[in-house]
Image (cartoon, rainbow, N blue to C red; front, side):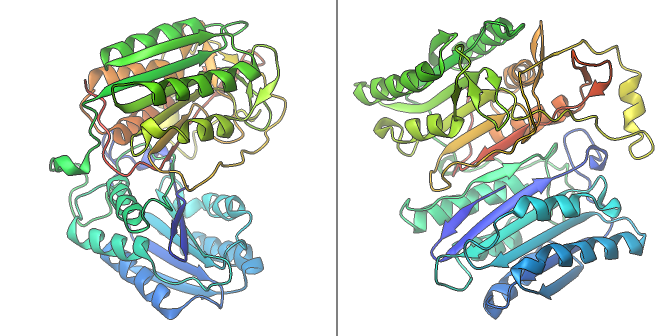
Length: 461
């Protein structure tokens, strides 16, 4: 999900997908009609709707519907939209839904997203959600996000959606003087290009100004609970080697208690602020068992919220305007994803013909509780979760799928855009089969990426 505050407009976008829409490795082939829907409350201005329709048309959406209803009826309206798509029978290439309402009224947007994700006509199609709301006491109206997105969609049709949003986020944060920033949440498994161009064509090199300057020092902190977590030591060694290759000065602490997690982050921040030489990037890896609501469990079994750790580093003066990367290898709930059945996705059988999966160790989780997002007004932060919200993260004696795949992909292409590389990491993780220690059934995992980066980030030393 992407959160943005721009003047009186808050925008959120969530991107979800299914594997079989990837026409070629790492790329979506968006075939079939593109359908867009604007679902708005009566307070929404006509100018906002007009800009949204302009964006939809620029992106090649042939069908653009608008429905107006009170916020409490949004779920019913989306149910009707889903039934309409299923009744049509024809396949859909992509769907884009904009939900617009006054601030604070879209209290459970995930319910709306889940409603549409169950649409059979959209099985295997990328789904993009924009959640727009106004500041308190104001009606939703156009802002930097929508106007910038409309302009870039027409001028740069060859850019991927992640590239477009990163550039729009940069403009939005610039016009708001850093007071507001966007956060993108993605579970995409390939590059998604909505322009009228070949999606697997070569992309032009970005200008130097569109990329973070990482010419100064780089610092990394790894806090890992090793005790009772088979394979965790392998993850620490693999990630440590990668950080060294990428030029990070790394600090490692093993088996921290919940309080030590916070203390080590605070000390890391103080050390960065006290450095004589400037820092251009920071990376923090947090590895532990996960609690039922997405908490991290220290070696003492006590809980600490990952959002609190992120806020701690966001206050670092030395990292102002610099990218801050957080890697979280931990469970976020107790749900075990069985994946899609063979009748829906033929590629499932190809996975079954792969070598037997190795039984994996689950992080300790008690229920599939949700995750409460942290503050959405902090820029230049990238968080990568090893599991989707409410789900378990898998690991065996060889290490976790997330960390081991991440290291492999970044070693192979260190010069690539990090967001695009993480999308490739997610694709590979999603294709893996794992078996939990509680049963012999095969399970699936999917990463979650949250980004408020405002420029292209390349970690090559």
